[in-house]
Image (cartoon, rainbow, N blue to C red; front, side, top):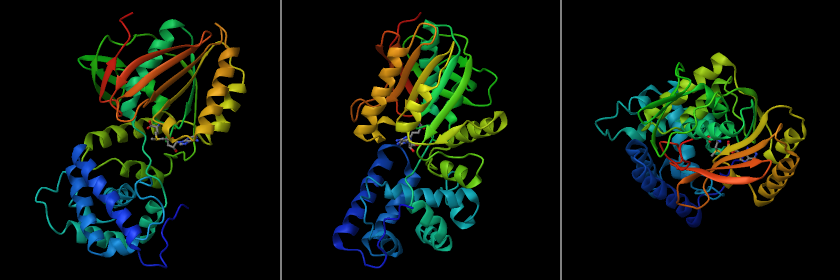
Length: 363
Ligand SMILES: C[S@@+](CC[C@H](N)C(=O)[O-])C[C@H]1O[C@@H](n2cnc3c(N)ncnc32)[C@H](O)[C@@H]1O
């Protein structure tokens, strides 16, 4: 447990001020990111914190860094979970698409729900919010296409930071890239993307093995973990929730992805040490690198480069990543392939994959 509250002591000025600042920041970002309901909820929470209300007494003594810990999103996630689970019918009535009258009873209803579900709130306060954004699969689909276009071999997938593993089934989704349909046209999951530039290579995909790891892997067979994953999608973004639910349903139908609960620092070298014949081994990750401590990044780079040196034309290696090379800039899809070790930037993209600027010329 990662409980950060010293409940024996009243909130000091410094601590409550830091908590207030974190909520004020999040209210701002909800406005910037088009989440008016979550903004209104957190604005009401902010008023509670400023006036020494129930929430101020519950989390005002937070001893960690409330911004780095994403404390406002822990509270928002707990409330969304209660609304989604049907555990708080009065609260659920306020959630989109129902909340049209901006009813002032939202916050008292929220507090009543949190008080009645103290164990759930404890659980949410103790954990970092965690998502699995399948909009990023559009970039994976395109990146894997670029890999296979060079060498028509089956794939062995190794995803690090895979969360619930929903991006390990990227070849089982249908992609609407502007006006063009790609991927599995018969899939129950559709991912839409504003695509600019040439279309990605359209090649036959054959996945022979798919493995993933995550420090905090999510087991979709456990309804509590599934609810937690869903609850961190903002209620203002129903399309994302519908898409996530469809991907979960597909995974349950075709077989849940295998995500080992492990640190990439030990898991990846162990996987790379296992022989793989006649496949392209692809290490990939989306929005994970920034969460890794510098020594882990260095160890992973060394392990990947070592494996790259051992790669041959018959047993090649690729490293595909969707990450942020610079703060405040678009995400970047990069690919390094061995033998050779050549690196290419394939695309720039929205962090959730809602738009993609593909940089490769048409094949
Ligand atoms: C922002 S999430 C992205 C999840 C997923 N890749 C996606 O795009 O939806 C970052 C993930 O990295 C995982 N993570 C962080 N450090 C890790 C490590 N050392 N080894 C494995 N996973 C790690 C976290 O648990 C979390 O699931």
